[in-house]
Image 1: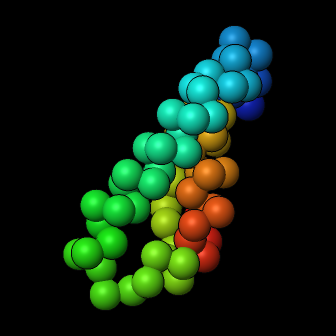
Image 2: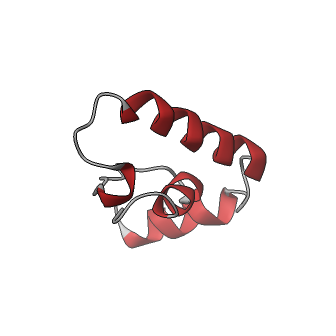
Length: 68
């Protein structure tokens, strides 16, 4: 994916394509589901973001984990 394609993609995206409330509740729900299966505390996790569009989820996730 070239730079020009990426620039066109972001010009067509609404920077707040998903409401803040949806993003916050989704991240909290995901973390609550995985917490019991993990041996590492949530705040110590390193998470790989594999493409959440404009980054709404990565930004919110960073508030709860060590590194995104």
